[in-house]
Structures are given as structure tokens and as C-alpha cells.
Amino acid sequence: MRLRKRSPSTILALNMTPMIDVVFLLLIFFMTVSQVSKLQREPIQLPQVERAEEQQSAELTINVRQDGTILLAGKPVASEELARELSRMKNRAGGDPSRLRVLIRADERSASRTVNELVTGLSSLGIQAVRIAVEVP
Image 1 (cartoon, rainbow, N blue to C red):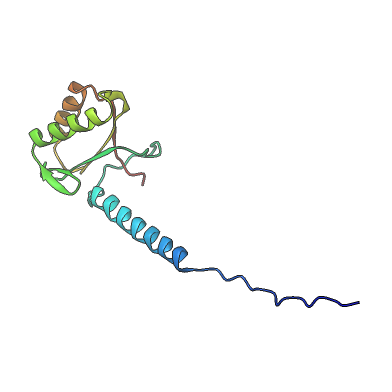
Image 2 (tube, rainbow, N blue to C red):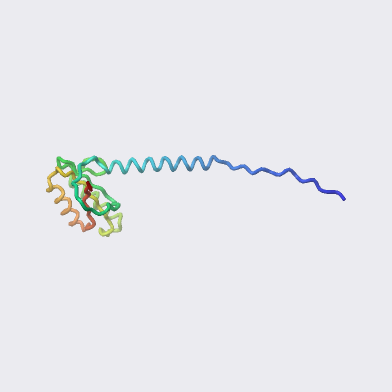
């Protein structure tokens, strides 16, 4: 009786190059996203409140410096530019202003007049989901 010789077993090898490419792309993505979120978080002294709700995510973050300068994505903007950007965002949301959430981060040493004007302008556009950021000591 003649037995067949077994063929040498083949070893499967994984090609790691695509996996490394994906890891590098994810790394670049998260580095970019973290830089964008840092732009929205201008170093501002926020008002302190004993009890506050946890901050929810917002589509738009508006920063107000101590001198009343309005910052959008790290750049100073005039009221007209801000109104145009809000209108664009409202159109992107399908024209439904109730889907937009805005966070106002105002320096506690700034005049409240700027924040009041912002909130009035937002409500005139129909945006009602407006939050004002605070710190819990």
C-alpha cells in the first residue's frame, strides 16, 4: 500500500501595509479634529456658577472676549459676518432653526450688552437652542 506524501503546509502571511495605512490616517484625522476643537475653545475666563448642567455639544461655538470682540472659529468677526454664517448654517440644517445648537462662551469681565445682542440676534433668526458656558468652581 502506497501512502501519498503530504505536501508541505503553506504558512499564511498577513500583509500589514494596509493596516498601517489605516492607523496613520486615523491618527491624522484625530490630530486634525483636536486642533479644530481647540480653535473653538478660546482661553476665556468664564463666569463661575455653583450648580450647572453638563455642557452639550453644539454646532456653533461663539466666543466673546473681555473687550467685546466676537470670535468664530478663532477669528474675529463683525455682526454682519456672524449673521451670514448663521444663515448659512440654518440653510444647511434644512431651513429648520430648531436643529441648530449654539454655545456662547463669554468672558465674565465683558459687558453683558454683547451677549444680549447675540442672543437677540439668534432669536430673531429663530434659533432657540442657545447655551451660555459657565465653569463650576
